[in-house]
Length: 260
Image (tube, rainbow, N blue to C red):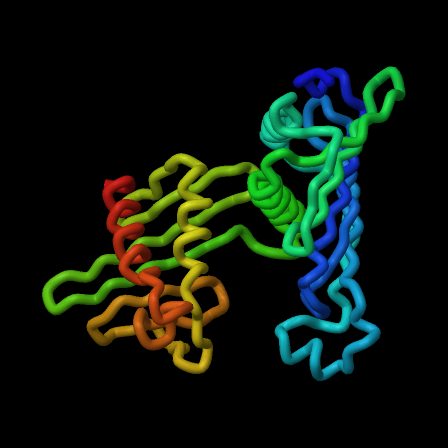
């Protein structure tokens, strides 16, 4: 298999959540990527699994709706072609699949221009999981199902206030930081993964969140749901032994330096 998209006509990715993940969270999708020359043609069909065994209240109480299945056909920007080529390199996939009940199922079928099909599986499953999360998020963004990601950090002290606004566009893979009244600064895309993997390891308690913009001293995060979450009251450690919250503070100090 070659590393270049010039030799492919279609890439079909089959994904299913790990077998231990129950309804209403479990889902399956087919992601077809085609017309691999300038932009990336997309045909996505996503279905949630085993919901017929649940009553409506059980589904709604978990933050879902009764109509979460999703289909979309369109195009992603050219930047995704380069990312796809990286993921389909010879050191990324293998002909054998080793999967446990805690692993998501991922299968990649590549159709080459001579119509030969190759079925492969990820070597680094975690890397592929994250790549697929990003590409699905880009589909949601381009299709207007969801807005680009935004997160705001607000630290109010007795003498100084720090305000940082993060914006990530998955469709064009750009990440910007705006500190106070300064102009937004474009930083490396790698910071998106750093933010996601650090911030969302904490537990967010909606019942402790604030609806109005905070004015009292403290540190707060707004994650796009219209609420402000105070650190240590609405944002808490996921376990008694974890130390996520100090890492969140350190992360935003690093991001502030990036934007300065």
